[in-house]
Image (tube, rainbow, N blue to C red):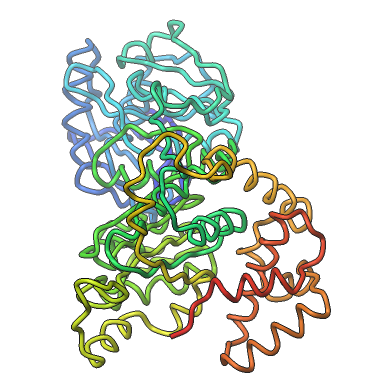
Length: 506
C-alpha cells in the first residue's frame, strides 16, 4: 500500500481553488479510478498517464489505483491534472523522489503519450493564487512565460515528465518579471486626425478624465467610430495590478476557447462586439460559465456601434454592470462573479435612414418610425450614460483641406490629451481614491464641492428637464471632471453648464 498527495488548482470563474490530488495504491484486482467530480477530459487522463509512464520506463503499480481530487464537490476540468496524477502515482509507488517540497509546490501540465508536457489554459490565474499562498510552480515550458509576471516564489519550466521525477535542476524563472509589452506595439490612433467635431473631442477628453460613459448620435460619416477608437489612447496606461487582472480575465475567456497564450501589456482593452452578439456573449455565461465582453473590457473601453440594432435584452443587461462595475453569472450548478468596470462608448444614427440633420438628401422617416427607433434604447439605460452628444455633419471645407497645418495650432493631439487626462485622474485618486464616474451617491456629494451659483443652476435644470436623482448625480460627476481638467477645487456654474450641455434632450 502507498499514499501520496500533490497540489494543483481548478478554475471557477476568476477563482482558482486549491485541489489536492490524493493517490492511494491498494491490493486487489488492477483498476485505475479517478473520483472527485472529474469532467470527461479528466477521466481520460488515465490513458494518457498510463502510456506516458510506460514510455518513460516506469511501471504502473499492480492493484487498485484510486485518485481522489479533493474537495470532492468542486468540478474539475481540463488536462492540467495529468502531471500531478502521474507524479502522485510515482511518489506513492516509490519510483520518484522529487527534489521539491510537495506540501508547498503546485504542478500543472497535460501529458503526451511519450511523457512530454503540453501547456494548459488558465495558468496565469493559477499562478496569481499560488503566489498569494507562497507556493512554487512546475509548469510546461511552453506556458512558462504566461506566469512570469505573477510574482510566484519560483517557477520551474519543464518540458518532460522525467525532468520532474529525476530531481535534476530545471530552468527557474525569476519572480515578479514585469508585464511585457508586445514586441512591436501598434501606432495609436491620433486624435488630431479627426477633423472638426470640437465639442465631440472635448466630450471625449472629459469622458477619459473621469471614466464616464458616452453616447454619440449623428449621421453616418460624422466621426463617431473614429472618436471611439481614439479613447483608449487617451487613458492612462494600466498599472501592474490592473494589467495582471486584465490578463487573468483574458486567460479565463481564452481557456474556454482552447487558447493558451495571454496578451500581456499596459494598453487598456478595447472591445467592439457586433450588434448581433447575444446576451451571453456580452455579459458572460454559457454552458461553461465564462466572462463576456463587459468583463473583457474591464479597465478599458466597450464600444457598441449601432446601439439601437442590439437586442433589447442585451442592452438591458448592461444596466447592472454600468452601475456596480461587476457582473454575477448564475447557472443551475455554477455561479461566477466577474469584474466589469468598463467605460461604455456607444454610437447611433439620428434616425433609421441616417439622414436626419443632412441638407441633401433629406430624411424621409415618419415621426412614428423615429419614435420606434429611439425607443429601442430604454430610459433607464439612457439615465446611466453620463455624456450624450449630438454630432453635426462634418463641414466639407474642414474635411477636404489636406494642407499641412490646415488644422489650427491649438488642435488637441493624443499625447497632449493623455497628459491632461493623467493629471486629472491623479487629482481624483488623491481626493477620493477612484475616478469620478465610480463615485457612490454619498461620495459624490462629499467630493463634488459646488459653488452657490452651480447648485442653483443644477436645481433649475433638474426642475425644468425632469432629471432623476441618478441623472443629477451623474451631471455633478461630469462637472467635477471638467473642474479637474482645469485644476479647480470647486465646481463652478460654468462647469455645471458644460456638463448640462453635454447631455442632450429630445
